[in-house]
Structures are given as structure tokens and as C-alpha cells.
Figure (spheres, one colour):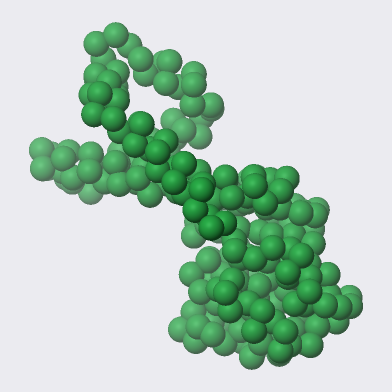
Length: 245
């Protein structure tokens, strides 16, 4: 496929290697220069152009600019009626995007994460996602939401990643002070948490880790007693109420 990427920040720079390994002809916008240059040097099927050059050379275009700047960027470009435009912006609606890229069609939103090039990594998608399935599955898990409210909820819930990583980091630092090889200790904890979560649903795993008097039960009860899980729910409610506001 001939794929264009307008905007070349962190997330777009993570998606391009994922698409490049499938042999697509990809052109990325020159901003940010550091990211676009690195991508073109690393992949022979990735080139760099200005925004209009990206549009001219692509049939499928990913837009990954800041949502508040999108209208100004996109309405100054000339799109074709045979093009499809995929939004990678959480703060812009498909209705708005279709207006900004007319006469092209904007069928879907795709929100990947920095690990999108890792096999099994999830992405969030909304709209007509058939083309995305053809490009990303089975290497990526596509979590499809039905409407903007579900998208907002998913964006709030995914923020659990940062506190989860912070908890593993704290445990790793604690362990590192008590073992000869701190790096190996951190690797062990990352593998422990990651592999167990990937093995199946949370409820059976929590039940299996609920041995009376066991280390896992005791630590979880200590954290529950301190209000950690209540604080998590409060934080999600705050995020969920502020995303569109």
C-alpha cells in the first residue's frame, strides 16, 4: 500500500516501523525532523516529504498531529476523493475530520501505543476498522469501541498503565536493594506481571493469588486498607469526566 503519515511525533514514530516491516511504501511528514529522518534512515521503504507531498504520494493517510492544530493543518492541504484518512487524534471527532479532509473519506480512528511494533500489542479503534484489521491483525490486538463515549472511557482506563508500571518499579527498587543483581530482579518482576496478565482474565488470576495468609493476599489487603484501589477508581472517574471537558 501507499501510506502517508502527517505528523511524526512519538506515537506515529512507533507505528511507522510496524507498518514498514510489512513492505508498504510509506512517506512521513518532515516534522518532527529528528523522528522522520531516523525513520527514513532505518527503513528503505520510508521517505520524507512536506505535508502536501505526503498527501500527493499516498492512498491511505494517518493523521497524527495535535487535535487543536488539526483543522489549520489539514484544511490547507488538497486531498483526493479516492483517499482514506485515519485519525490518530483522541481529541478530534470523525465528523470534524471528514470536513477537514474533504473530498477524502475519514472512516476510522486508530490510537496505538508506544509498543505497537511489539507482537500482541493492543490498539484502540473506532469506526470502519476493516482496513485496519487487514493491516494490523493478527500481530496487534484491535480493541474496537462503538462510539465516542466508549472511546473516552477506554482512554481513561488505559491510564492504569502508568501507575501499574510505577508499582512494578517501586517493587523492583525495593528488591534491588536486597539482591546482588538489581537488573535481573527487575526483569523477573516484569516477566512475572506481564506473563500472568497475558495468560487470562483478571478475576481467576486474583482468585489463584488469594491464598489465605500468602504474600500476594497480604500485600493486596495492606494496599486496600490504605485506600489504593479506591483512589484508582476515583482517579478514573476524574479522568472520565474531564476528557471531553
